[in-house]
Image (tube, rainbow, N blue to C red):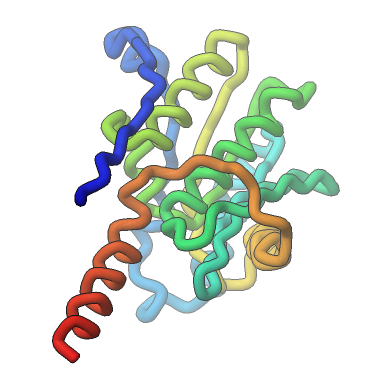
Length: 212
């Protein structure tokens, strides 16, 4: 007997031309320096600090996602303000990083500051935002929120920064995300594709058991 899995999706109708006309700056300058294996940490720190000076008038929001075993969590922080969320067990790190950016956008939404700099160490997530990969539900949600905040007068800039090179904001966001792994699991939604590896492992285990 087979069970049919029904997916109920919320559809967003967005004008792609309108989205493209609203520039969201994603800065990859630090990534262009090179690989962490070849570049000393102080070189990365120097470049990040140089860019932060250029955006001195912006409120900084650092984000990070964390995964340990099956536990997955996200965090965003701006000064003393910290927002965290625990995702369903088995969620992908990409989903964690995406939810961390959504937490940052929530902070930006209620902030009195109009100019916001969101800093993330997830290259794949920022590239997906920059390329507007709307086929991914979390990127679609992020782009939708960016669109709304931009219409409300927010100036949003995203910047990639490397992890584990001694940048204070990134270290704090990493610690907050790791601490959130101990929270009670939330009802946060993640793409069903996150659970493909779990299903695959289950099928393999089941097949092995059938052989015995």
